[in-house]
Amino acid sequence: MSYMPHHSAIKPITVNDIAEMKLRGEKISCLTAYDASFSALIDKVGVDLMLVGDSLGMVIQGHDTTLPVTIEDMVYHARCVSQARRRAFVIADMPFMTYCTPETAAKNAAQLMQIGGVQMVKLEGPHFEVVDLLVKQGVPVCGHLGLLPQLINQLGRYKVQGKESKEAEKIIAEALQLQQAGVSLLILECVPATLAKEISAQLTIPVIGIGAGVDCDGQVLVLHDMLDIGILKRPRFSKNFMDEAASIEAAIAAYHHAVKTAEFPTIEHSF
Ligand code: KIV
Image (cartoon, rainbow, N blue to C red; front, side, top):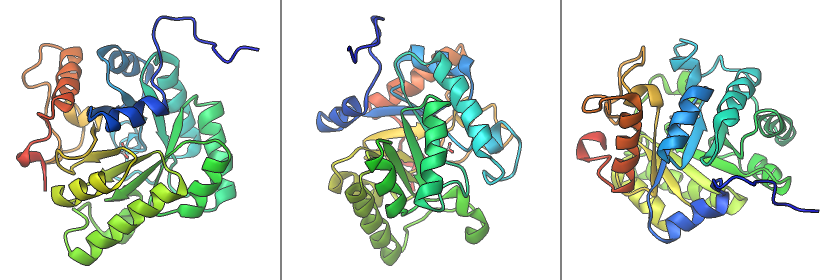
């Protein structure tokens, strides 16, 4: 029996490739994707990771928050993205309330992987027991700390997290515990650049930032923000890559290049 089903010349990126990028100091590029056409374009340009984010609740479905997104929505969009992907590594968000117990999380992660076709799932917050069970069952997990959009009704508004030292220490401790629990990747959203730098240096797993400064191991942006086609105001930490590009493909290629060369983000996109 062969475990080598790919006959194509294109070698899909694996979780090991991502870990090695951090070891050799190569920046990791990531963009959100929600459909097959953009998936094909992002993949073609060479972006390393695609995130089927629950941000789709806002940029695709037009809601005010990510909370209305269901597991069925995520599986549908994950499948659309996976169909067109050749090389990029695909991660899907576990939506609000779909991982409140390890057993619930296992059932929903199974759908994202078996039907959605993704290689990793992402969940917001310090849910160590959930991570532990998923990893033991063979599900690669991406953690997400800092600003947690699924907590918007507790937070009141989207704002930078970890500015106070006590809060920053809590985020560092949770990042280390998530790594200990088995996450292979961590997303840090809207935290001071100095805090993100410290966490990226302390963790052995890659840290992908969004509004977290240039010293993370990689960067992610919401596709509609960086193409400036969203119905929402583009956040300060994002950049309009369409400004100087002749096409959508050129804008995505410029983003990929800017991340790889650490030209994005700059101070103006950092906190
Ligand atoms: O849902 C999403 O797109 C995300 C990114 C903002 C990291 O979680």
